[in-house]
Length: 471
Image (cartoon, rainbow, N blue to C red; front, side, top):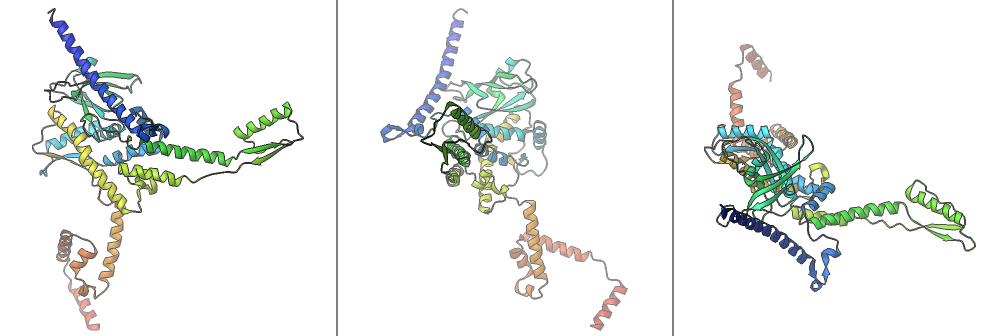
């Protein structure tokens, strides 16, 4: 026993050193890359990043500060995420028309825990940093130390809480090469505010109690690239342009003055004090006039430039990098795009985002884990994520199409020779845009309507016959 204890302590120390080395190696690599980015001109003599005022090393706090205070940065994070999770998010078993036990259990779990809202928040928090996590509040936790243990046995999911990289720091990695989780997190240090009392809660949590989400990955499966990283310099440029424009307008709207003292006039201390008081009131108060004998005031020329072109260049660069159309990014026209191409490209981008990120990195890992721990029943067949149709026409678009079709149909039916030029079936398919199935259904409904018409009574037939004789 005396020899076992120090051996275990030594193994633990080696394990901790390995984790620290992994973390420090990652930080050093990022810093070296940042330095290389700055020293790229004139043989390394000019640090272009420093000259332009761009920070070399960016942290989560930098991204969050932009997100919190800059509208365009918030739009980059929020608009794709909110559009991705708009509408219902359901899981359905493939090739099964009936509602299955798996589908019903998912619907109940989703509604009870408000999963779609949690996934949307997790999406945004993940994009702000290199990763995000979803804390899974399983039953069976009686004391705070229980969070450090793996999830075992029958459990119930009582809550979920999305957290950012800053609130969920990785403290221990798996450093065993033979492990199937080699290089992945083992333990997290979580911190968040308790809504019941406002206190900060700190937890050491085992990886089996979180869903780890990464976006925009290259080599690492644990860390991705923050969504604001590649456009951070452009965001700084926009801040400079906006701030410079506001300052230029502020100063230009209240021009400065140049005062020339008459050669025969003497500035006494009292005159200087009065002049200083007037200037202070002019600069900081509501005074609009300066009164002083012996001094000739001349307004300085105003110079106000139009910043719109400079701002538009930065917006275009950000739009190209983020795949967010400029009209969507700037919120212009409230989504009523003058270009249908923008709407189609935006819908295609969101659909790709659902297929390549939201489903395989958030929804399916969560659902698979719920199946594994027995919270969701195992589906009898393969399941898929079903989203709201992004390309479905809106109610306003449907109404507009209906009006146009009704007008075309009226013109066609009131022209006696129209059917001779264009057969009825061809008109419905090529001019009204109906599908063959829709045309078949219309013909069936017309035939059914004819069959259901009541027989003509003898009195009605007599009236019709009389009308024919008179004609």
